[in-house]
Amino acid sequence: MTAPHEMTLAEASAAIAKRRLSPVEYLDALRARAEALEPRLNTTIRPLWDDARDQARKAERRIARSGPRSPMDGLPIGLKDIIDLAGHPTTCHSRHLLDNMKTEDAAVVARLRAAGAVFPAKLATHEFAIGGPAFDLPFPPARNPWNTAHHPGGSSSGSGSAVGAGLLPAALGTDTGGSVRHPASHCGIVGMKATYGLVSRRGVFPLSYTLDHVGPMTKDVASNALLLGAIAGHDPQDPGSADRKAGKYGRGLRKGLKGLTIGYVRHFHEADQPATPEVAAALDAASRLMAKEGAKVRTVTLPSLNDFAGVNRAILMGESAAIHGSWLRDAPEGYAALTRKRLLPGLFVRAEDYVQAQRRRRELVAAVEAALAGCDLLLTASSMDPACRIDDPEAVELTYPRQARTAFNVTGHPALTLMCGLSQDAGVPLSLQLVGRFFDEATIYRAAAGYERAAGWRDRWPTL
Image 1 (cartoon, rainbow, N blue to C red):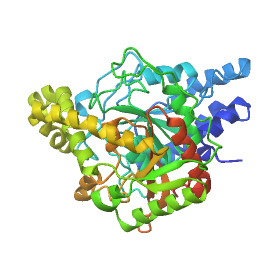
Image 2 (tube, one colour):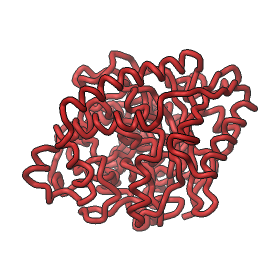
Image 3 (cartoon, rainbow, N blue to C red):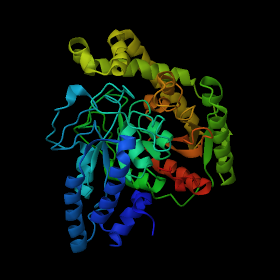
């Protein structure tokens, strides 16, 4: 039988539904693994295993009596600690909010709770989803499960590390400039930033009102589609929520790549932010494998990656200053030094710069839409480099501009990252990114699942 920590969320869901797996025994096995490995990984700010066990016991009795409430019934989901969980503080990994007790669940948590999910941990993040990894905070930064000397990516660092290490089958992260997809890329898992507005942000501490997303992080594609289906849908209390129902995102997972047209955005990693040779080689190998599996792959051109990054920076800095301005002025010492360094420039963003960035943003949306008019999907790099050492501040700082994820926070298009190789030196994952049309997450999942089966990376696990 598959070891509990190697069961995907979808596999555990099926086993629980067939009563071949006890939610309580499954949770206990994950807890034992987490408690053994956590001192090396620092994934968790607040362990909640006892509470989760009570929830799992109730789910087990419910399932025995009348069957599962939903495919999520009895399944453990980790929460990035900027997402509210009733009865517990949301710290945002910051001394500013150590006592920030919440009385209501975030919208995504409420949806999962109603579906029967259980919540065993509030997970590490970079401070306020921007400042990290930092070593001058009340909690240590999470580490990469493939090589604990290395950065796990951020800002949903604990979510990526916990799922990548098999401590949890799934977690929720948030993504403003790539913060679901970055740790997913570095930790060898699947991360989805769905279409802007598809998943509610209510009850999630904001970083940038018009760039923020909440997204699922899982070991495999099928599980990611399952979790997105559980959290998606219109929320009238979120001003950015789209009036769309959750879809059946996993309906095409067995169709494969045949018949799809994929636009390969090569200039992102060849000219705009040149990738390391092994990242570029992994992307080219992935494009060839997709073609072998029946996709038509052709090169397409978008505006410069640096143009997208500049727009993202102006909007994010301006909007984050509106959120953090009073603390930055009155209590700057409450932040980690790195967080303070990243947030302070927002106080100097001019209204003119912000408005011009929003105007250029519309043009960039139109450019991506034009490219997708002739393609079903886009293939791009995720990170331009393998994960660097976590104690190398200069290399860590380069991590954030040297990526192609931010572009699709600017445009709001759905984007998913998944593993496409391992670096030779550090043995850490390499990943690619697939981008689709608005609200067409199902096609992204179809292509990702086809690649996942053909490439075989899903079955690789770190040695811990």
